[in-house]
Image (tube, rainbow, N blue to C red; front, side):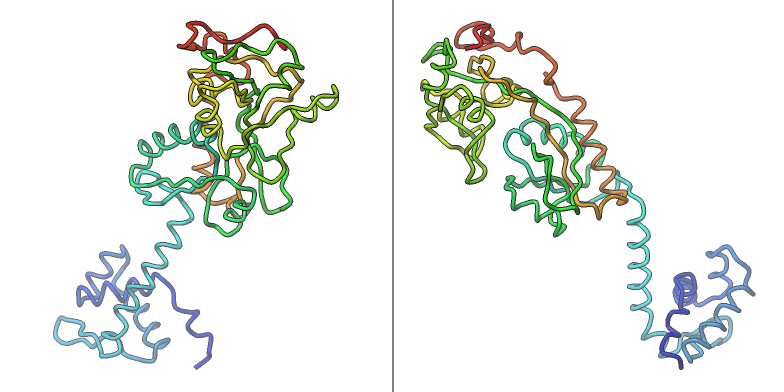
Length: 325
């Protein structure tokens, strides 16, 4: 027998054998398949030739399986299940999905995106689950390894041609301060001389603010390097520290802070959805990417909106200072 004869086996014929085995009848198998009895008989003869065994022996009105067929039935079931799984991966039905989706992001991305993403998943794919990981540049390897679906981050350029970065949202940076402890800095010099808390996710602590200040011959005093904006807010609260962060955080971790415009020119911060190119045509992944894009469109208080209506409970008014330091 040719070593490649097994490639002549097909899922429909295996399903036919399973039906004959379960019902002990060619007639009932034909009815289930929606074909004629002669069609099933011809397919059965073909399988007998391929497998070198009678497979079924007719005894009265019943088709009795041979020892070879008895030994194959469980394996046929496994093969058919694998074929069904392979087919199911060509489409995606969120209502029946039990998939775990995985997102990489920092606290800003988590606070802004994840609650709405989770609510949408629970509504559209109630059997699915969600896991999030803290972002580090090295964790982009998780996308390459298939351990994560999406990274949400400011990162635009990657060193890998295997990763795709799609802009989904943006925000501007503002400087927060605790109005119960201090007033807004009145000059760029006072801004630079103040103690600052910054986000540092790598060994490089230099930011666009530092580069802008150095053009003016100034350096700022960084008192605290934090792994997250939430950590900065917790440490800065009750101190004279300044913290520059995305404006949308005025609604979350910096809700009880006042804020001013940053006294150096900064570009808008773009947030990207990063994913591995292997998932370009995955129905499941495409569905999840579209869900995230829809969530991003619905984010409150986008970069283009004013924060003038943000309430700061501790000083009773919007903290947006027209003193641009």
